[in-house]
Image 1 (cartoon, rainbow, N blue to C red):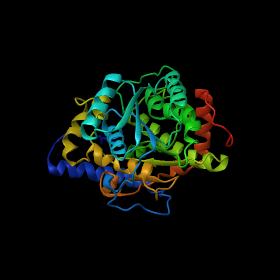
Image 2: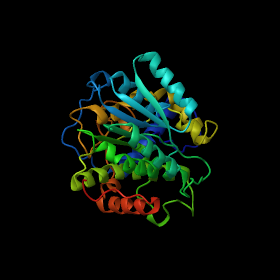
Image 3: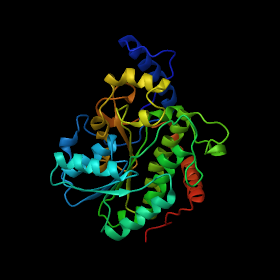
Length: 353
């Protein structure tokens, strides 16, 4: 999701925007110099929602589907004929999202399920409910996130809140839903990362929960790097164990959503910068395109990272996102996976069964 630059003022002039963009380009270029996208078949640059094949008969779950890109994912999938489960914390917002979707897609098959990703008992309860009510799950979109709250928070399980919500909750949810996914003929898991990962060049294994120091955007970046590493490691383990899962990652560039307002706040330095840049950013619908491609396009590939390909990958045509070197470190990804299993008390099966 959005990466907010630290600048000395918040001028809204066109020259100030160009300066911020140039600074972001330098940071991203330096951070990504050692990495490269791994893919064989780039998507069509002009691929859009209109190119989605029919999803009739398929079942998807979208976390954080009450707003932003998650809402756009849910709406587009429902319009394509899919049965969609929106999983989020607030039932009222869930019903509002369903009502909005049905205004545009009257015959939409969409339902709401409550879940708090920062509470693993809630995540497991969702998995148990869906295991008894759904015949299978064809697609899981790990979309929900929080970004850069100014103060360090702690989840119900004792984890730092961004680590818990953005990464650990989705890790456990994927494990819980693996049996349902394996009942699908072609299951896909799409996990959202962010161009903010250039601020977190590695996983801080010595202090995963940032108990010693807490810098909001650095912590956010680590959580999104963990998401990207998880997506790649899930594909490797699926291949090795015979789960049959296609695991992809996607990022939305810089898109207008509620993350800033709900994170650092619009009255913060970051919020003021974001407001000044807003007219240059993608809409949530545009930001959802890489995720929807990964989730539905027949030619999308497991183990690939999709995103916009314009300047600094902030916006632009769909393509292969740049993969930083840290995310290509299979040894670190395996260590993160094992560590996450241990601290969450979650185990993926060692082989297909």
